[in-house]
Image 1 (cartoon, rainbow over the protein chains, first blue to last red):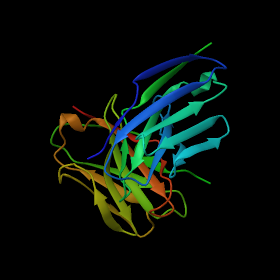
Image 2: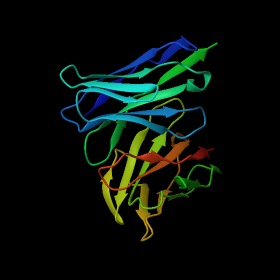
Image 3: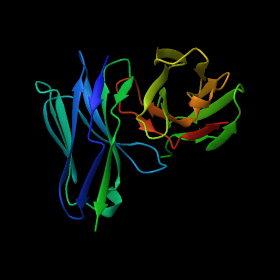
Image 4: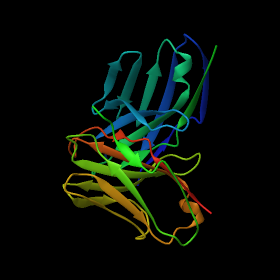
Length: 109
Length: 112
């Protein structure tokens, strides 16, 4: 099977940079995705890493290292609206995304 | 472009009842996925439909079933509801089986 581990909560201040880590165990996968979910809302796709390295999309960047079974989501210039839960998810084929339990990010003024 | 839509938004049922949830994918998307998100937990994969066929199924009992229609919309059926079925049921769609999954707002089911 697969498993992913994320910190349960992270707190940061407005304007700062925060990194949310995701470690995983799997026998094989196609890529690692990141989703944002506000309370009561739908998960919103943020980023996907198929290959090792950094993917940048505006204020958000995601990194993957297959050799270390590790990835992270980097959020820069934090805004209050970034307060949400962030999930990493493994694409192990056959389209069944396996999600981590999520990291609740609290952005403080 | 309209996103994934789901209906109803909220539903209250009692134990033993049956429920049907509906999902309309983004226009042009042929794959539909269903996930369950119990309170405070991550998303658990339920089902994947593509071109009208069930392509993959998560670790859920057979009382969870569904189908995909020729217009690519989908239904999720849950029979013999149990209290632990209370959750947010999320539908996602993708252009094909290789593309990113985009989620709908979900149906919040409460089983009493």
